[in-house]
Image 1 (cartoon, rainbow, N blue to C red):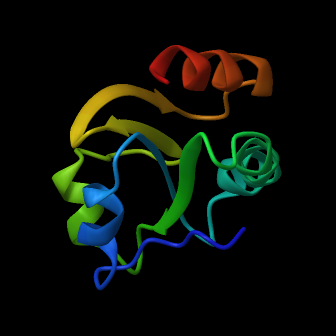
Image 2: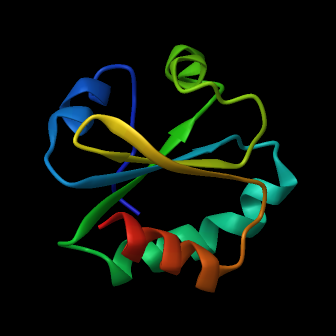
Length: 104
């Protein structure tokens, strides 16, 4: 997956039109490692329709705090600068896909 949010490029991601799904994760997080391949698959499936990007909370704790992320993995769905949905924990692929479709 190529979309990695950092403190340097964060504003660029937020400025993009359409749906942005941010996967807040950490290397040491077991549930994050379970969800990661699912997020990668969804990024490929929705390429061109939604931007799905990962944000390491250890590297970008300020961004995580800005979105109120207290537990990981957390997926935050942002459309045109506004939070439209959020999931916490390991969520089945079918549910995530449905949430992305609904947010589009």
